[in-house]
Every structure is written in C-alpha cells, then in structure tokens.
Length: 77
Image (tube, rainbow, N blue to C red; front, side):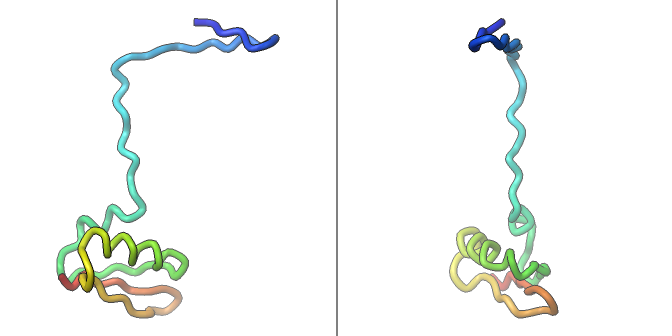
C-alpha cells in the first residue's frame, strides 16, 4: 500500500497474526514476592513501589525501612 502525503510517499505493509507483546511492568517482581521476602528499592522509586504494593497486596501488607541510599520493602501479609 502506498500513501501520498504531500510530496512524500509512505510505504506501509499491513500484517496479520502478529501477537501483541506484554507491556511488562516496573513492579512485576511484586507479584513474585512471598510473605517474608524483601527487595531493595532506590529512593526515587519508593513512592511508586509502595503504591503498587498497596494495590496488589492491600493495606499493611508491606513494611519499608531506609537502607543505605534507598529503601528495603518487605512483604508481611
């Protein structure tokens, strides 16, 4: 298929059957954590991780503590 846009010709190939890849997630690791597991999080990411943990696990399901230059997050429920 050729589309003409002003003086430019744009060639487009239409394809079928191409699977949509998973988007992935910056917090996918939270799904794999069991009660008692912990993970180190950089301090500029802690707010995002706390929010995601709240939505995945519920209120009071994680504990965070300062750890060096970041934070450690434990799953407790």
